[in-house]
Image 1 (cartoon, helix red, strand yellow):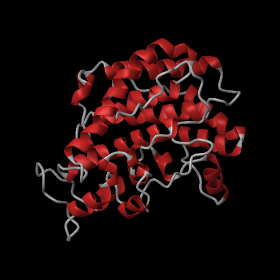
Image 2 (cartoon, one colour; image 1 turned 180 degrees about the vertical axis):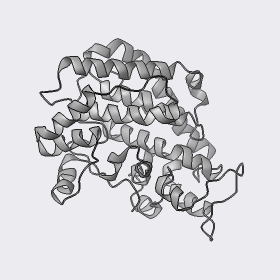
Image 3 (cartoon, one colour; image 1 turned 45 degrees about the vertical axis):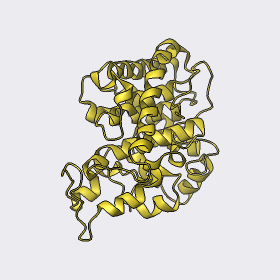
Image 4 (cartoon, helix red, strand yellow; image 1 turned 120 degrees about the horizontal axis):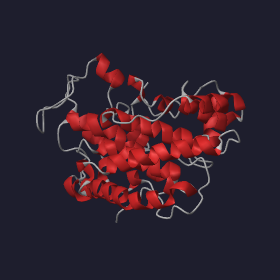
Length: 303
């Protein structure tokens, strides 16, 4: 059974925030995050972090910093999708987290919504999305799916984008459904069956998509599909006793030196993932290279 990653009815006005956080989520609920804030932890010092800090404190100082950052910057156009997908994730999150702030005026909302839609439209028109049935968890293009998926989730219920958003939703849903169902078909008792380089390239984006699914629909892919259930055993199996990665698959493998441990997308807290198999985003480690730094506050990065 396939799982929809975005709500099929864009006319339903969702309760915000809903992207990666919510009022009652057991892992990233506002009450839990407020406790972290009270203990001295802080979200990242950037647009997304300020928007989240406003959600947790109600301090308009944080909201105004986020709004000012939005006013003085734009989403990238024409840049390489290998980098721009993370920018769109960040803007989508900030848009959702700051949405209810009274100072987030309609003109700025509309401008950002238009840029998010344009980016999603451009991405979905590329050859990578020509055939959703070709999408797989080993494909480089899995990273690019984050761009339209997060944009559409952020814009759900936003009246100015109903028609365009609806035209995109089916393709995004079909791509993600095929990714998930392919994992059960290819590796019902395992996880990544190719080299560790594919894990490095696609695992972070896959877990972000799964967490987006969980927090926006209440359905957790990590409890339904083999790639998440078995990631711990697979990671330990592919890591050789001397700490170097397995040469299995196509013999492409990342060199796990200190820099790689700091900056790669590889999951490096497997033991925690195995203890809490449903919370797949515990294994995301994008923030080490300066991208998606907000994940630190969620406890989604290795220590």
